[in-house]
Image (tube, rainbow, N blue to C red):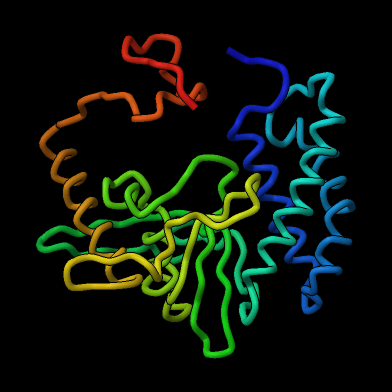
Length: 248
């Protein structure tokens, strides 16, 4: 049911857009001072058309929400720069398998899986190695989530950057929690399996889950179940699903 104000998806999209533009507009001068100076003007431009572009009706709290977003952006950019020594922003909102860009093609045994998506950000160091970052406004992302098959985005993005787009070798990657101004505990460099460590271990885990999902799709297994933290209120089935349980 339409409601005044922002939902979680719209809020996240606005944060993504402002972060993308701030770093793009900074160009060669990506010093912390330059980035923070760009936040207000960039945010003001995005806010001006946000209700029309992202499809929401501003509530009486819209003015306060904008101020809170700007404050959050200052804090999160400051924190992100503190863990970015030696890394230079390289690609933003990088598509793969969309608008003519190469798809990520995974060959798993006799199976061929084609994936498409948009990588929030790719950084590069002086050695040409890559770091993949996926912005998130909420939630927690741990290695346990990856092992259970609940957080597969990051390794898929890393594989896409390396194999589909051929940008270079990925040595690091994490989810950046915008509101918490910190990186997730899940980092590609820290993932371990029995015989692998780092991004290769993450690729091994994600490949196993993709094969399991593909087998389930082909077998017609679509058993519904609630997420462990409850259902998100933006699920399109909220109004009729008999299994719906409010969650995060």
